[in-house]
Image (tube, rainbow, N blue to C red; front, side):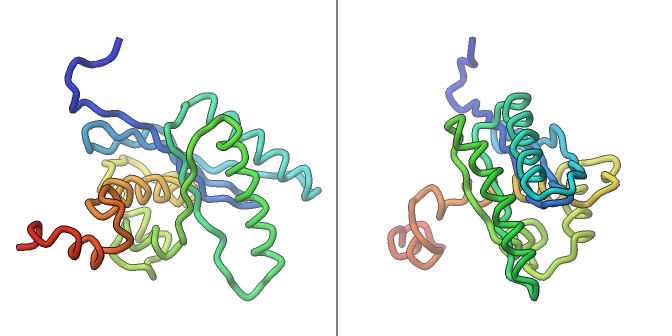
Length: 188
């Protein structure tokens, strides 16, 4: 039926924190710029065989896509640590999650862990607990989940909303500097 008000906008964002043992996710509804947490969770991946783990990730992301029908998907990028094998495994998990979204034609955006933390807390070096605490305030979450992988997934969704709704993102500019050069009249 739709809403007669053209400024009425709603979108659902699925944020994914990929992992090979635990995959966090968050479902964020944005309506007229107001954010609301719909669901978040941490999916335990107990299979011992790596290929079965990837199959389970695919299955779970497909279930989330079917249940919540997100308009957009945002995924945390693997970060380089000391263990290259861990990074490769996370990259595969991320690839499977991205594939599940692309199969149904939903756009996917990737964010670095640092960018996500910075968007939520203002510091790219924030802890999981600091991110969870800020999300609790932003989204008025009564009780935090047992696993912070869930709030990490929600943080990816919130980061995506904040990044995609900024004036820079809407203008197509690559940075604030290029935005200001293209829009000198908007600077006070």
